Amino acid sequence: MVNERSQRLGAAGERIASRYLEQHGYEVVDKNVRRREGEIDLVALHGDTLVFVEVKLRTSRKMGAAVSAVSPAKGARLRQLAEAYSADHPDLPTTLRIDLVAIELTVGGEVGQLNHVQNAVEG
Image (cartoon, rainbow, N blue to C red; front, side, top):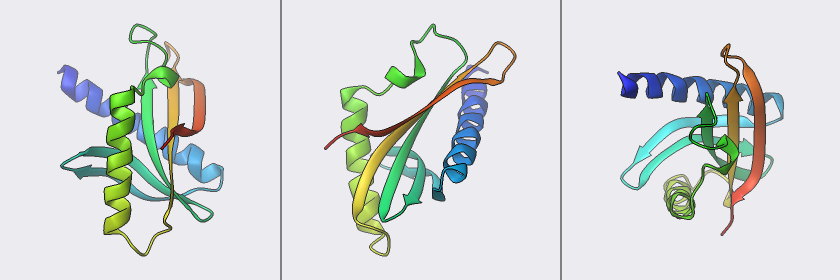
């Protein structure tokens, strides 16, 4: 049951993040890309940059703030995923960036805070 709830929350976070990005000039080109290296939540175009977006949604602060949810190991995995995805899609821009969209919901389930961190993972 926890897994199903996590999947529903993850899907909700990705919908919220997609809407936000599109409202800010991004074109979402792929979602939930699963590769052996892991999963990419969203892939978007922003100008001449291919942007890989990690979406973190929190319903409470028990697990810490959503914006601080990307560990160095997760960052390294995201870089590998971005490079592999880019290699498989030579028709897309070669300038890559990894962003984080961190969403915190209120007790009532509304978006309380949304932070978009560009270049959340460097390298």
